[in-house]
Image: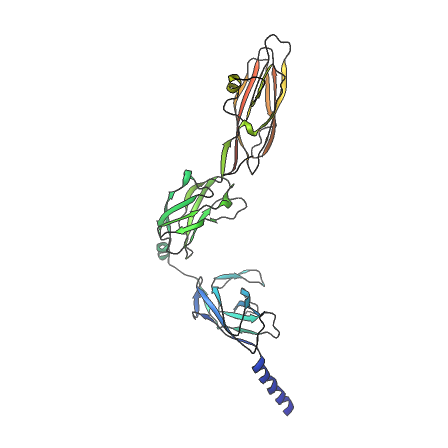
Length: 380
């Protein structure tokens, strides 16, 4: 019995000299109740004769009476002998790693646990219990603190565009930098989107740049809101947004392969005629233009198929087609097409136009095409 007692005392003294301990886990500033959003520092002490340079700790949050940690605050945090610290912004909810569900931290008592990762036996320390609460404001107080947008000082070309700077005026924006948010119906991007290069001049004037990630997004009416550094949102301000632009497609962007069966043929800028006549027929650089004339005194009709191939790049698509000229000089001529139909929203199209011209008659057509694509990019 004496041997067992002596052995126990020996191992106790040995652990006291060579053992490891994490203790005095506490928050600074020290309170029994914290408000969500407060910034604190978690401190703890490590004691022991030695500690490996690879030692790390995991910091977790535990609810009183729970057998599993409520959420992870940090892991792989280096530790040294003596006092250690880690910053933490207190939040009002978290995802419990064991249940994968969001838990409200503003009900019940909580404590911090700091544990040496991978150490056996377990070495950890715990703080005393504390509470987290949200800011509860009366409606009148909330309204008095809420920021307000009174107007947009300058929107180039009358709409928001990627890369443009937006200036807002209003009140209660605060002295510390917050966010300017764009709420819209964006494809593949979660709304809202924050402006970049934000400049918080003062509590009444701020500005920011529309990010390039919105280039190519649909043109629409969006809402601007200001989110202050204390997480309060302003009233919405409606403004037009343009992520895409329109252009008239010139004939030079079209590959024309036209029939030359008539006596006079003009197809886009290719012709078997020269001089002013050619320029007058296909003036304005339309995307699709052709003129076919059958001479006087000939026998039989002239006929053929004109083909026009267009391939757009960089996200550009067909928006609108407008037939400006579609002319037959008599009832004997034929002019049909284009086939297949104009492919709105597509990037490629090979259009065929069929024509027939009887002697001393002609057919003539001019088609204008509008394309749409991301601002500042080329359709070629």
